[in-house]
Length: 389
Image 1 (spheres, helix red, strand yellow):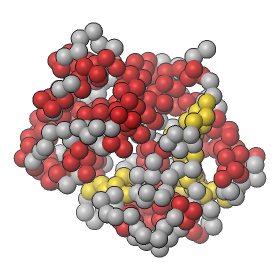
Image 2: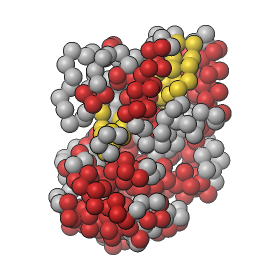
Image 3: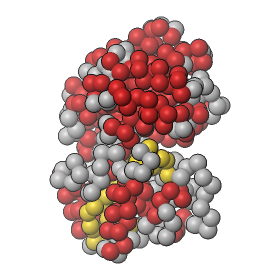
Image 4: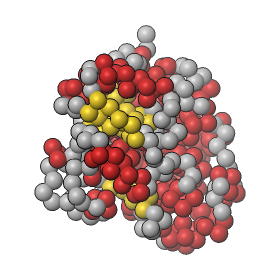
């Protein structure tokens, strides 16, 4: 039997319970963490899916009170988070259960971040020093349960939230806030449609490629990124074509988690642009990443150097040169039916100038292996408008 069909418990970088059917342990986990009345946070598209009822039943079996907050946009906004905090306080909830894709988990993490204090959401901006005087036990305990294999957001406190006033995505976090538990149950991803499986899977692949491409020396993250590339590149087509293949779904969920840990090292221009495309045009994050990956790989070609053979080897490619690697990425995107340009995913051409300006200020730009200017970013966006590959 494949190892991806077995249960396993890991302690790095946070406690993780992996295995089919492990959502049933949610109630027990809440009891162990001292959560007596938990608030499930998910997105609007997930609130009526079977895993929400399963989560509620697991909590009820352990006499854990549970509420549901699902007023979360595909790209969560500061208004969503404010409403979520209000729900948390009014219901006297003492823990947050973030379940869903990236939007549900980002919202849950953000609500936990501000739920136990009077600070403004943007006081937790990633680019600012930690808000002083806050300890780990001052944040409502947080459990993260991904239902897609893409975001990898389940092991860290960082969350991407759209600042409506500025029309940008901002990263928030606090070093003392960590998920107390992540539950990786591949059965929860079985019902994901082929297109969303492809889009979220590409998100995970881009996480790993961009993290590995960051020039800083970080062998821990690099090792995780390469294993993520290996798992995702070999399992994603199967997960898309055979949605009920639990082994492929498990490999994708683990690969996504590894990729999510690896980008603690940083990301790059794919994410710098994608964050702002999503903030301005409300596009799907993973799909936007997939569209933008080829032009950024081409832009970074000279700086990737010795990293290309290692990524090629992880993908099982017979050749280890840049052209073969780039072609393999294009072939994968074609096989997954990824649209060929930003226009096809609803981005108006007149928005490319403001998106370029906003992307220049995104933190992910600073760890891209090749420096960039606003005109260079605008050029890439223009090249990506109709034919990014």
